[in-house]
Amino acid sequence: MTVDQGVWAAPGRINLIGEHTDYNDGFVLPFALPQRTVVTASRLDRPEWTVTSTLTGQTVTFDLSEPVTGWAAYVAAVVWVLREAGHEVPGARLSIDSDVPGGAGLSSSAALECAVLSALADLGGLDIPVGQRPSLAQRAENAYVGVPCGIMDQSASTLCQEGHALFLDCRSLATEQIPLDLAGQGLAILVIDSRAPHQLVDGEYAARRAACERAAELLGVPALRDATLDDLSRLDDELLIRRSRHVITENARVLDTIALLREGRLREIGPLMTASHASMRDDFEITVPEVDEAVDTALAAGAYGARMTGGGFGGCVLALVEAEKAATVAEAVTTAFAARDFTPPAAFLALPSPGAHRLS
Image 1 (tube, one colour):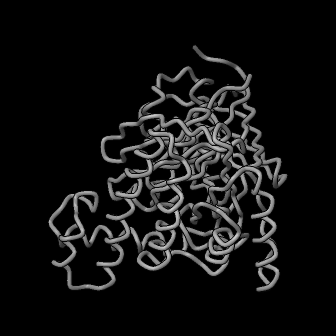
Image 2: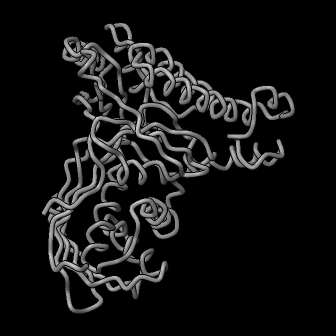
Image 3: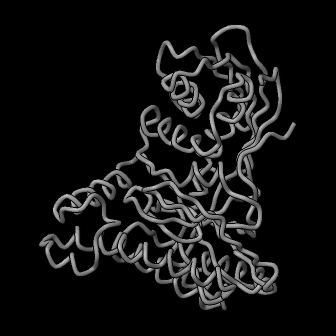
């Protein structure tokens, strides 16, 4: 069933644990944020797409006869991938608004892709099962935009449910909704935006991915998900050993976290979060001074655990705290940043929210 116009939304995401495991066929545990990208769209009677960003005030019109660049490339990528999949994509006029912080590692790009995909699917009456949409959005970003991301961000933005984290097996794409009742235990996830630039298209992300693929090849396994710590003795490259060790131990931390959440032992996931950050800092080398400072300060101020979230080299830190202490922890981080002349951070509480859906 087609519609002529409507409003659609898709959220940003926080990854509770499981960083750089997705493209290694591993495990991740994200949840959707209340912050979301909203697309107001209407059909056009010609194969043309006009996109306006309320954030930039810019309007871009394209028909895919030439490559689209800049922020509009994410919209063009969705049109392109749907066409590549054999769908008749309707022309459309789209207006985009978002309160997902850009460049913070909260997956603003996936929120945009998934909101646009939802809008175009409904406008065109396209038969695309919800479970297949993350793969399409991922291919759009990989093949058209040129970012070699895994499938976690698009899966979270599409499939998450309110009050739950999404356990995703990135090999089988099997999912399970894991209850995450923070308020019921008097807890909160405090998100601290370090305001350090978060950029993945500069080659660092691609370099980490290439190292993981090389290590798996040398070990003779399909992906690092299949490797063990004992296997690392067969590698003679110290860099590949450290990169692999992060992935192997991070997968284990995801599974341990899920086991604790299933038993309602939320506070006990804190040390796993902190260990995850140490692994990203020391073995995967993707943290920066701002996020390390935020983690250390949050722990000193009473957080049960803290870790960077996202692809790295900037972005956000999440800290598991008593709800009544969230403001105190946030203030401590702000004070610590000021002492080091860092850009003042921002902070907010993350509430597990629903994935992409039509608003009206």
